[in-house]
Image (cartoon, rainbow, N blue to C red; front, side, top):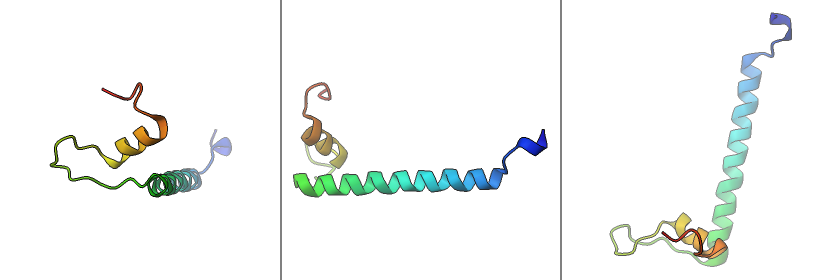
Length: 68
């Protein structure tokens, strides 16, 4: 049924464009939230180290169910 198949290259381009758009939105959102909440990176070797995403999650959602 070759007549009904969509060209693979066109579908791949749309998929890649969608992935890039989602990544741009996510990165931009994280950057805005980090700036809004005033979150700064910490030294990875320090005691009690948390990543920027961990600090952002705690600031936005709280530490309830995300606390280990």
